[in-house]
Image (cartoon, rainbow, N blue to C red):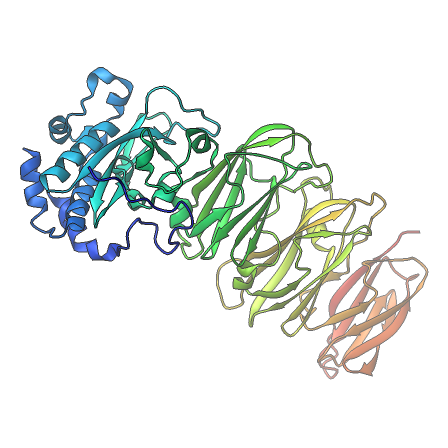
Length: 539
């Protein structure tokens, strides 16, 4: 047998996950044909029928691969009871089931009949029972194949190409996986370690210890469009209570992160070429960190597990607390722009404010309806009152949000958006984490707005929704299209039109517990509407 022609470990051709340049579309009709062939009386007869549509060596291997992946199921009973399983090709063909050694043996025999050099390879795998940190010793636990095409050897695993078993290996589900057909050796080594080093097919082969320590990149990591992770080992540690991971992507990808099954201990910041993750374990010890992803274009598909780590935390970062209500991703990104929120500032996902105040600005796409909420896990302030701690001002496409926090703590600022013409509900377009450590902060609500307060109106003063008692209070508002305006506080105080749509005046708060701003858009009909309401402090 000729020695393998070796591949570089990295970089591989990122546009193709295979060890040779192939177009899967070219196999479309062959795949359909091979998957429907139903011959089980002998491997020779089966291969002869398959090869009626396969001409090149590559097509022959493909036809055999497709047939095995679609007709041989994993023998879960035989896996648990060796006495009840057989890996002999004839038995596998007849029963239609086997464990990995049976898959590999049948595949090798069928290739031999077709005149293709094929080798059964044994080794260790990071399969269904694998957990981060596992040490591999003793006998090998998996088998797969290597085939010789176009002058070099290539790797494939028909067992994993055929489907999946559940966590207890009690049930098998046919679920075809293209990834394990002629997989590039630099990717195959993520979860397959051959006993014979040469079958890694790598110019720089890994040791078993390196294989054990390396992170397991699941097939979906690559098929989703991800390229690389900055954390390459399975076990990682926090630094000052935080673990930082950057995952590179060549297409827009959405992520979910789970720490011990919970999703509230991570900040996810999308970038043009991937995602930056900051993980803050709530306690010391070893944690299970799992990362899920899906391509942004796959709106209907579920997230798939792509990476898993064992995360060791020696100290907890008490300076940050992530609200459970925080919707990821956080901060401006291509995702918020896709949702119609452009040029958002600040561009940092965390807004720290010692006085409990901040301003967020952005440009919204045409005909986009937006509103914001302030969410918290620990605040006793009701949700509808928390919303009144946000003041929105719109000038055409420009939007400004003033936020005055009701008290210290950590809050999630969510900006919701939808096209005005869409019948559906608003979607979270942009999130920020607001953090205020100052215990003395206690801002009042902004004024209550009525339906007649229009988006292009602007309130200059007073911004506080609670006015001091027995005081003269100055009012200044910009309200285009208004003919008359006044303030009602026990009696009516007219506002004066100063030009540029500004209305100014004052009132004395001794006359009432409430103060309302009233407007009329047609002075002739003498109809006034409430647009703003303030409360007056009690004596």
